[in-house]
Length: 115
Length: 111
Image (cartoon, rainbow over all chains, first blue to last red; front, side):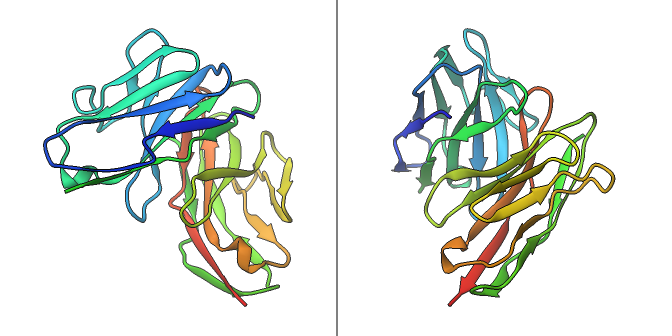
């Protein structure tokens, strides 16, 4: 398995500001992902964080709003830019080593509230 | 594209009752199937998994069998406890490792 930590665990931010969320894995992984879970909803994939290159975004998500970095095999950041109350969600990082099972491990999430 | 459909909640049960949460999927190829659980105020945890047809995943008294003919992966537990109260997500991965989640089913177990 892999242990994933996220910082911050929660934050309350003002409209128009930006927040960067950090994700750290305790061992090397092949793929890292960022998800959003809006209140009372399921998880939606934002993007795949690619090591050393630009992230791959899902439909409805753009780099200007959610810039992502992945400088190495164990660390990634997600920035939520120019925030509005609609961005209030839990943001989760996940990682997988791929292979047969493609099992993904999740971080505890970052609970973001935008006022 | 891929999709996962699971029964709507909330599902309210008494302790020691039998639990079933239905999950069906649409996918190209042969996805791996998962059940994740989210306890109140906590992150997402993998509950069980199955990677090919007829595989049975099991953990903590929960079971689910990968049924290719009915494209289903129903979750069952014979005797639930109050501590099983949580939101349960059915999910599948494509060949790129991306997870597609169902909407989630809230389960409430009362004493």
